[in-house]
Image 1 (cartoon, rainbow, N blue to C red):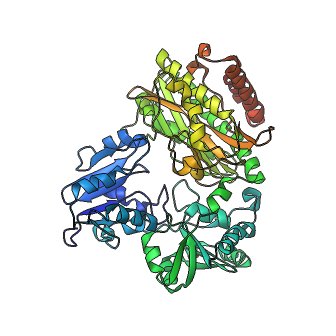
Image 2 (image 1 turned 60 degrees about the vertical axis):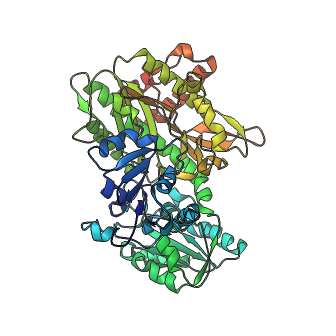
Image 3 (image 1 turned 120 degrees about the vertical axis):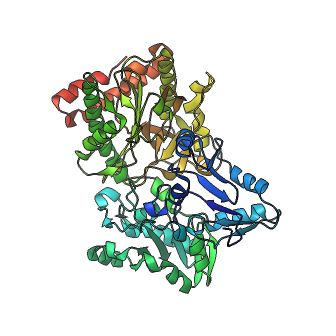
Length: 576
């Protein structure tokens, strides 16, 4: 930085495709700061280093930045870009900020330049010292790419391509450029494993009026798939020469400016870039009939794995102790027994007692807790199956727990029920729905610092847009809900150092019988822990909802269970 007269360098999370989870090659922020959370921005100046992240990672960041020169800056619930204000205070007129180019987008760079324009602070986009410093940087992943059968995707590739072609025609462009890995995997009905837990592959996609180009690791695509792509007028070009191709391209390229990275945007010097809303996230978010049916099957299998995990845990704790990591490994093993299982949809969060109060807790071998027959345990986990993606959280009592924990767990459950059986008019957004889940906590002066719900893919990323249930009024919280969307419903409460409570079902948005209205239906199939419910706090309507839900859970999964598992599940699916 000193050699190039750079006064501040900004390294966000993400990769050239703006992915939430990235391959080892793109964990640049992790390498320099030691912080491993999935969201955060590192800024290095000549005198300081700071990391900005949100409440999900405060405790994790405190631990990982311990004895480290990087200072933690805590973002509020709206995740406002206060790091820009910090830079404004630190730098003077004429000084220079450099953005890590592979991780910043064209829209993001424009925002920086507009923000600092009046102050006389310069923003640079060509400074990239990472390879020179990170000498043992991992190489780019090259995992096999495979086709997803239409019995799982539910829609032909040609039908999906027509969506982009219509967008090109409507907006007067020559091409539409896709950069997001999950958008491309959905569009092409292909899957990979370049990113842990996400069945995607590193790629770009350029849709044209008649022909299209998939930029991917060509050696990883079998010849029969390449031939099949040809049938849909898709040529495969190796990912390594993407920039060379775009340097020769001419015409009007439509794109979402917030998804096109700086090197790619700079390469298109002979093109006219035109901002245009990406139609894929909404189409991907509204699950088709096949995907909706398949997720029900995936949830049944997931219920079997969870049943076996909790049965094993109960029996084991009668005579010995186990660690959080042992529980996560055991759960992975039970999921692996299920048909069409591919892998975990994210690293299982197994948080015992105080560790459960860390929303994105990650158990490490050298520091994980040991479970005993007492206290509160939170397990948030999910699986990737060819027929669906799952994400379920249950909080259970392993033995005696404080009455306060029971009360707060009941408030969380009441909020989950209120959101889960909401009925609302078409046009409703996630920010309008969020209060339903928080209302009972708010009445007691309690809250949680993260959103209530995120979209979930269909054998795709477990965190998916465009919708979200959150208090943040902009971004995904402003997206309208549509029938067919699958979203998590996961209110929570955390008592730092003592316990965490989070209860999560996935809910499918459907048309209600009343014209012009929508409603949710639970697709997750697993009972709630009776020991963490204060019946006196429940209304008759809420108790009836739990009874109906538990009856459905048992009816939908009993045929997949052994005799012993049926007895256990029947007991857990209690009725009031």
